[in-house]
Image (cartoon, rainbow, N blue to C red; front, side):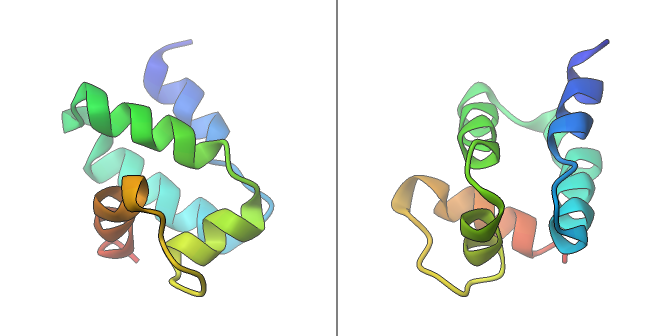
Amino acid sequence: MNELSRYKLRCRRGMKELDFVLERYLVNHFPQADVEEIKRFDELLELQDPSLFGIIFQTEPTPEPFQALAAKIRALS
């Protein structure tokens, strides 16, 4: 299984909205992501769905390390 396939599986969440935006990020930005962005994406995917939803859809404050990545993901929704 290649790296992109593994990330596709990790992006399958319990919320359809998250599935949609995370998969769009994978298709549109992940192939060009640098090491730092991939690290942040890994950390973002470790979050529980409610926290991840809050960050992506701005229902809770976005922690500093995730601000640039979250903005990139939001732009795709």
